[in-house]
Image (cartoon, rainbow, N blue to C red; front, side, top):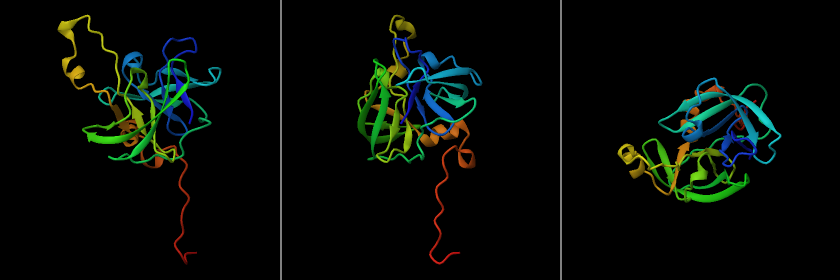
Length: 204
């Protein structure tokens, strides 16, 4: 799997952007991505090779689901998941993200429960996990983690009480189905390789 980031190579923190089909990638919406607007140009930098840059535009955003989707201006990503998978309770998964040293990190977890609009995974969530890709063991894209936000408590009167109270250490996962729906690329417009047709026995 190939990861990108919207952060320049010399940045202190590195946002995680996950490619999920030939021309689209997804990340979290909060923090430094919160000001991005539809059709805004954004350069993505390859995590392992910062000299490899991809020009994209903001294709879709959702504040309620905390995601932003990027679309390549031209061409295709050289590496991408060739299928997406369905996510369900009890399923094991691998989580691919970026650490502060701009290196890939892997975690494993199990989908513990389903809540309204998202799933909860057992892999312990950290602030720099936001945007991490969630995959099954076949490498199919299941969604992304948007679990952690940085809260500043210097203004107690305006503290986001409800948001802090609902903030947990497990991994909050937005499913691939939700991402595709928000991106409006479900069905025949999805940029995945079509599955090979199986012919029934005896068919011409």
